[in-house]
Image 1 (cartoon, rainbow, N blue to C red):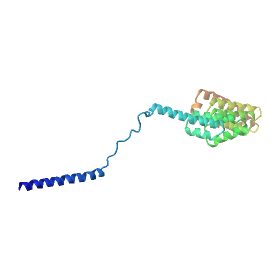
Image 2 (image 1 turned 90 degrees about the vertical axis):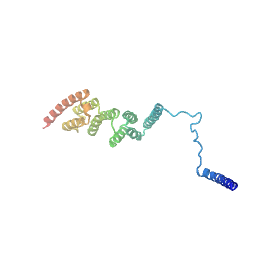
Image 3 (image 1 turned 45 degrees about the vertical axis):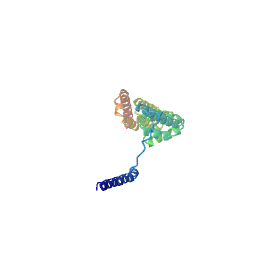
Image 4 (image 1 turned 180 degrees about the vertical axis):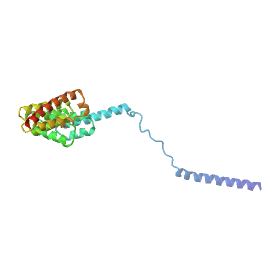
Length: 228
């Protein structure tokens, strides 16, 4: 009896061991073991750039873009002005516009550039305004007077605008603006004055400009009264 019991226990033990080794390969297949992740940096890979280094690289890339716009402007590409305007960098924009003004070496070219700026409602800088005023001084007429005063005011430069007012008065006194009445000239002076920013109007140069306009107004009003 004991012998049969021992034989039965041995039999069941053998069956259990067989079942264990039969299931183990299946378990290994159902749960794959992934290899460890490779070291992507490698043994001698460079460290990632610091924030300071990233800023330097971004600044260098931006500077390269800016210089590219200036180079395009020197080549006469007006589209460079629009691209400079989109950057929001006023210094870059003024530099690009000044380069284009230098290339406008004739009145037709300058007129085309001024029209392009006005059409797109771009900012007028001192370089463009001075060029427009200088072209008008060489050959003053009715339309040129209005344009010169307007561009001088758009530059937001009180001294430049005052110079244009003085020149217009001088031409009017000398009969070189015979087709512009005293009333029209007074309206031009006063209307364009309000294009200047409040900051410019309230500055020291703005104060001198106001005195010039007051004197011009009295002179023009006297001329208006004399013709009535």
